[in-house]
Image 1 (cartoon, rainbow, N blue to C red):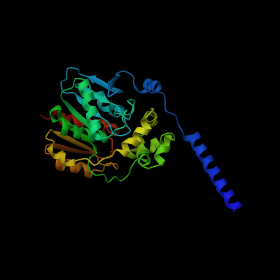
Image 2 (cartoon, rainbow, N blue to C red):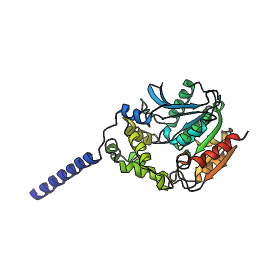
Image 3 (cartoon, rainbow, N blue to C red):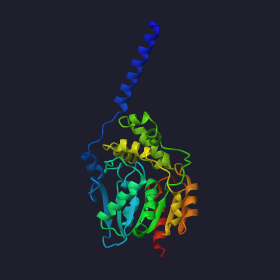
Image 4 (cartoon, rainbow, N blue to C red):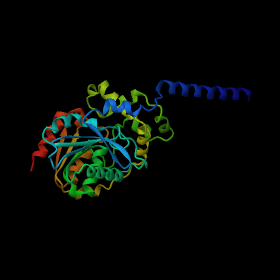
Length: 315
């Protein structure tokens, strides 16, 4: 009995020491918002109050454009993912993009409601605040889900729709980023709020790229450091808890011209889902980009932008 107690005591102490060492080497406090703003929100970044949040956004290009292009990023990303597109689009269009609540510099929803319905409402509040009555709405992944559901709810406010590796249909992922898996795992997701090693961010970004050589240190730093914005790690967990089954029957009711743009090597939302959108949308154009993963606008900005410009030029 004494030996058993001694073994249990040794085991408990060992686990505690391992926990302390993990916290020392991989535990990270939130990065101060002012420091993040200095690095990731230079001009033309601005902030606007929406639903009691200080929302980070960029409004660039031709201010006389009455039908701006609105870009919505995906889970754990930020408005920066569209930099390759925005730098070119702003020459002829007004381009709006924002950090969705829970990600980037915007911070968490105060009520922790990360349902698609709430995101749709948020986008509507944002566009109303910016005086946008109609737009070309483009979204990637989570952003694509928000975009098509926005088009269902507010068809009169959408001129054209662009869905890039969009979520909505049941997922049969071939590979899921480690951060997403941890965020959905009870108990382990609690550790995610303070133990966030950089290598996990790197592995998660590499998961959504087909060409791993394009995952630079600068790119990983951006994803990693913005994850450490206060509230974002808990927001990811809350978002994963909020995952719901979308009413994809509504997709057949979207009559707006739609570009379905997909990476052929997307392992998170595989190409089969692109064909489902193509099947159900009555007025769409399908473009599949070879040798690219889940974020075509970031991994291959020039080729994906060419597809967008071709789509926009169609009357």
